[in-house]
Image 1 (tube, rainbow over the protein chains, first blue to last red):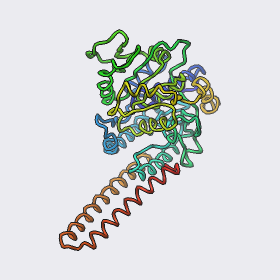
Image 2: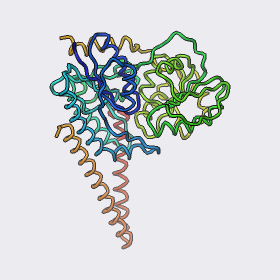
Image 3: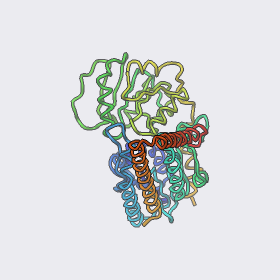
Image 4: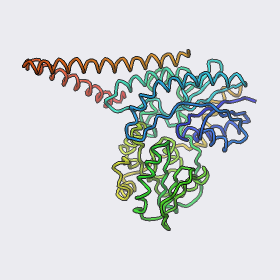
Length: 365
Length: 72
């Protein structure tokens, strides 16, 4: 039975959750899957796939900052990141020595590849966006990305090819020859599925993402939530028990929801308020939601770029968390000038295409 | 050591070196301008200011052009 090692990055749950349909598809084809991850990413996949073996595989220190100055902290953490990648390479060799594998799937883990075992890399960021003042670093990052991509047989991008339906804009644009030769645009990949339920929920607020910015958003949104007219549900994305503000009849606050509950609420929502992380964007695209208010994580250049890009495309309204006027911004977000994402092929078809065109060549020999 | 890590270390040294050179240049130019100002050499102050402005405009202009043409 072909054996696949799947290793997602544990910076938020986005990488792990988008791998869920891929792992499910591999299991449907009777392949053995071992999950190599750490923290919440490992916990979520372990819960979703109890039949899969799971090994602890630490990744990189999370550089997110409490202030809006994410970039200086990120740059200062480079030496630590390099050390972590070096350790990751050693740990990977130890994991590979314990069993035989036919394929390695790395979701944004730069050091998870082998020269002997076919390795593929999942990423939606072929091009890193940086503030204009750092443009030489953006060019340098393109070259570095090409170097990393050269280590893999193929680069899987969970987006449509560059063009009017590409959800990640310039982020998913291949630049170097090494990337262009290897890239495969699978289309969106998400664990959220469309259900046949009515949209009876006016607002769904998703307070998610890595700490400490998750708590920051909670502190900004919760005191203002009563200004929303209609019924709303707030998912805090925090399993820890802490005192919640008074809940009114039309507003429910849920500290932590399971994947299935979250799927249900997202299906029922008419308008979603959330961070502009790419995984959340794929979920919105999968469900075909037309109204959302996006609040990028301050200093996270990827989210800031996506918010700007969607606003420019007329897809969704976005607002900086420090300038947020919830009642006014939610009205703007529901204006007819915002059309939502263009219609895209759904995950079920995308994951089949990914298996038939990429993964099967390494597993069905 | 893995070649990816070696490339990363080289890149990191290049970034820190560029930062060091930039800060060094800021210090040297700042000192020169201050001395010129103190000695009343306004021609050098004016020339230096114009040169800095042209360099800054060229730098930002290059970034704007790269972004506008979709290269970054």
